[in-house]
Image (cartoon, rainbow, N blue to C red; front, side, top):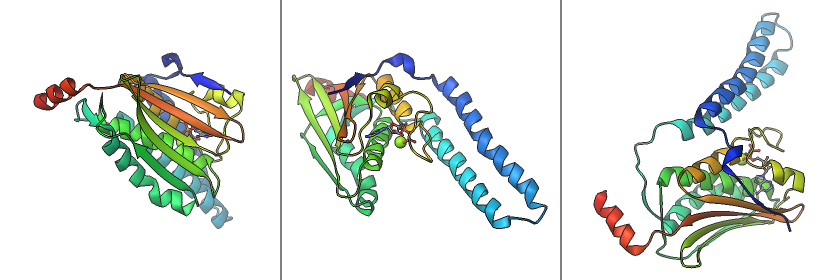
Length: 234
Ligand code: ADP
Ligand code: MG
């Protein structure tokens, strides 16, 4: 059993993230520019076409990951209803999971609240769920469960029976550029961890190579009295 708790230090600040992303985007753009210069020579058109499309797609993906995090959000922190939160994220992935032949299910304890920025929490959850789906082969299962722990913490558990990670891979999770995917960006996990920690939550990864992965996102429970107070302030 390999368990791993992430610390804050391994995450970049948003400023550092911005400059590393600028750097990442410059690479595909340089390749595209080079291709376009060669296209003038009217040779190997179709070959360059593929390279150009691939590199632009990569730049788009990187920008997409970043913009969703760094764009100023007007939404303040507030009481987030956990089951509603999970349901809305899961619905985004139902078609994706079906296409890949996976079962995607969720089970949420009702009436639990956490204090967070709803949009950021959704984004972080989406990234973790997407990775779980991508790690799992056809016929596999991804389950999302939320429950109350020790009457004071809300746990979001995202579990898959996919490829899992080796101890070395697990050690790198959440660090910049770590990806094992051919066209991965290696930003998703880092960004989710950063968002969750910023909002006062914690993330734990537990994984067994060739067996699967379990991610726990833990937030303090927002108690009943605190919920109504929050709602009145809104
Ligand atoms: P990307 O998805 O673009 O590769 P991420 O930061 O989202 O970047 O994930 C980084 C890496 O962490 C993945 O490439 C994969 O190797 C590993 N990973 C994350 N979640 C899982 C999971 N549920 N199962 C197995 N590996 C995972
Ligand atoms: Mg990812």
